Every structure is written in C-alpha cells, then in structure tokens.
Image (tube, rainbow over all chains, first blue to last red; front, side, top):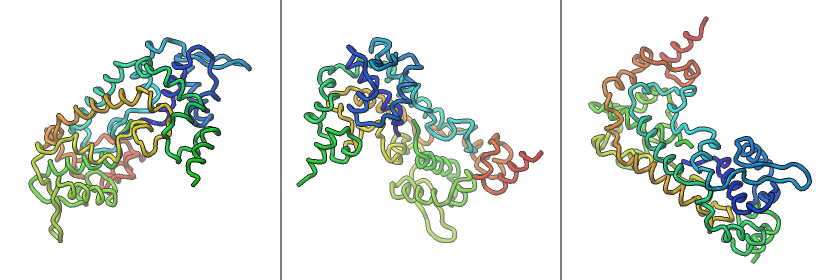
Length: 174
Length: 174
C-alpha cells in the first residue's frame, strides 16, 4: 500500500512553500532542495495552482507562494485530490471490475470502512501541523543545509542536486 | 492508493475456501471461478499454505482447504502479510529514502497514524465477516452461476473462463 510519487511531491512543494513563506519560490528552488525532476514538478505546481492552493507570478522575478495560510490547507483534501484514485481492490472501480462475486462479497464494505478511517485521520491535520519545526526544515531545504545535516544513503546521489551529489559521491570514495 | 493484486487474489482464495468448506478445492476451481491466471494463483496458494492459513493435499484427488475456521483468520493480518510493503511515501523506507527533510518533517507521523487507523479497522474483521452471504457467493463462484448473475462488462471476457467468455462475447455481437 502506497501513495503515488505525485502526491508525495505535491506535499513536498506545499511544505517548502509553508517554510519559505516570506518570498516567492521558483521551481528551481524546490528542484534543488529535494533533488527531484523539474518536469515532474511543473505538472504538480500547475495542478496546485489550478486547485487554488498556491498562486504563481510569471516573469523574471516570478515564482509561487501559498494562496492560504498553512492552517487552512487540509492534508486529507490534498491527498484525496492528488491521488489518481482510491481503488484499493478491483471492485472499487466499477468500470474495471471483473470480479464475479462483487454482489455478495463483504470485503469491499470492510475496506471502505478502513479507508474512511485513514482519511478521517488525515482530515484532522493541516499543512501547519507538519511544518512545526520550521527553522530545522528551512535549514534542511537549503542545498548547503542538506549537505550538513543529511544522513541520506549514497544511492540518493543520482537524484540529488549538484552540490549534494558531489558530497555523496565523495563519501563513497575510499 | 491501492492494495496489490497479490493481496486481492489472496483474499479471493480465502473467500472461495470459506464458501466451499465442505470439500478439497483445486487451483483450477478457483481459476475458473474468478477467471484469474493459474501461475499467479500458484504462488499465492504456496504463500497461504506456508503461512498456515490453508492446508494442501497432493495427488490426483488432492486440493486445499482452510486450516482454521474463517472466524480465526483476521483480515488485518492477511492484508499486512500479503502486501509487499506499507511504504506510503518514500521516507517510510529508510533503505530507499532520499528526502532530505526527513529529520524535521511531520508528514510521516501523520501518515503513520492514518495507516494505523486503517489497520485497526481491518483487525476488527475476520474472513467470516465477509462471507456471510455464503449461498449467494457459492452461486456466483460457479462458472454457470457467474453466467447467470454477472453484470460484468464485456472487457472482462478476455480474463474470464471459457463458458463466461463465450457469453460475454455473444453480448457484444450485434
């Protein structure tokens, strides 16, 4: 059971913007901080802007910022709207379901109840609740900060931005 | 968010055995009932037997049956032991985690709490709770029963066992 990378990265964008809430942030800032692909992020940022969670400003000095205070952005809503679906098993999707016992099987009801419990917990939290360590997060989100504090394994070097990649490569050198 | 097909099929095997608890069941019986691949099922059946949920008898008249009453088989345990992992996001798996903000980020704690709530619900139910409509399930699990009762879309024809496949193909004929 896992969430998509899309949802994971959407949450990371929102976390970044909640931490650096005093300025306009560029996609390059976020790409460099997390070492994740720019193309992937562009789609997500577009989605977050369309959804009204962030505002974007075009131009050379443009960037994005949160459109609402972090206390107003529900984690339950973000996860529900960024996950492509919540079809835990085949019969959750009537358009794709081929399971012949669907009309009499009790599994779907139990799984729906479990999924509801999952979302009830997420609905109790907002973006503000996961960025309480704002200063530490700000430090970790600076590429130099990452180099200081990171306990990341060497295999992350490939995805990491250049300064961190160099550090991780050096660590592996005998 | 979804469970793997492996878990879905493991549950279907257990449901079949709970419904037909008066005889030894073959892999072919289950394959024909659900229209799912034999190779996939063999691995699952082996796993369920190793785990002690079912017993298997070899030979021409061999087959499998539940090793315990359905009331003793917890859905939470089955899902937890058949899902390959519960790494909702990257940082749930320390061996693969490259997210630099892990030490200060509050997301993992919230997601762990949500996942726990999901499993608490599943742990409240057993196999017996999802096969209460035993007679209806028995009917739906017979290939002929499926042909009678099914509302399955035509796209399921490819996966279905032969008699059902013919029916579904005929439905599509003008």
